[in-house]
Length: 126
Image (cartoon, rainbow, N blue to C red; front, side, top):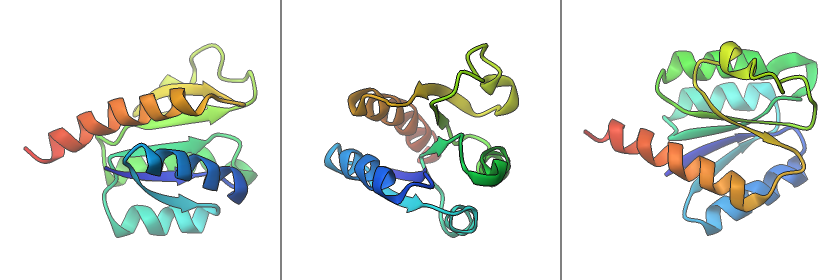
């Protein structure tokens, strides 16, 4: 299962990618908006793990582009802020399937990515 991780902190993104790889995912890490857009143009992904605190407010633009490229791709948002505590993330990003609070448990992250990513991958293969 192909997973795109969009996280501006490369060290943290490497930790997430390493964990998901050990769980059987093939991960692409994008640490800049241009990298994320290029990755989304290059191939379809079963799931997107998105840092909502991406610099310069790019997270919502990346989510919009991901939804445009693949209307069924589930997006798992990650944030340390309380801004989305009211569930607004699900109104702002139609493909949002989960919101994780940082610091997060890697097992929880993997469970959400695998659950929704496998559903999307299965639907795409039919």
